[in-house]
Length: 231
Image (cartoon, rainbow, N blue to C red; front, side):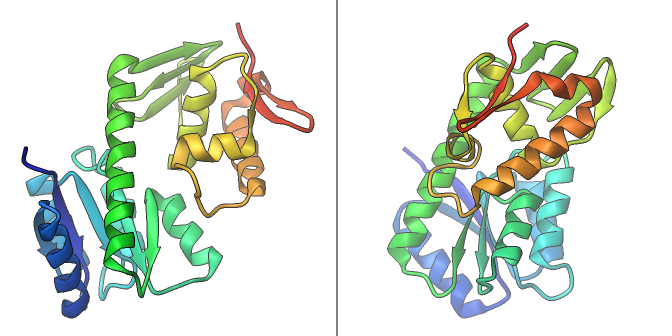
């Protein structure tokens, strides 16, 4: 069975060729781009199943590429595996909060690269299946359109970040259930996601504020985590 198509974006030809070689060896089809501008054109025109995106690019950098991809309806749902030489938490979190699904730090082993690619693609398929099962969620005065990645509250649009949307969707799909911060991170971003539990508190605070009075239905369960109150 033919495997997925992966767009590789890196301005270092040796790194690009290394990634390209190992992905092809595993049976994946590949596309390549050396710049952010080229990556945006290729992604929109070819519709890859995954984008392996270097953070440090000349001109339009990886963060901006990621941001634009997530704003474009044609590429919004395309998973992104960020490749970075930066190891500071703030840089990694910036990429993940912009919409990347996972990251791998240079230098990396081909085995780790393939494992990360498989994991991101698997989560992407699971999200697609989940969206197909239930593309609209209505609870209290909140309506979530999973396919369009849109949220309205009392009929008014609510602008959420990628992570905020994922958390709200997860809690709203499971009203009444209490989830720990680690469970929320794992459900929204996958196991072993490099973000502290405190970041979940910050995201929840942002969601509540943006939902206005409907934000009160996201309940803090002391010592455990959070839940969406049942109607």
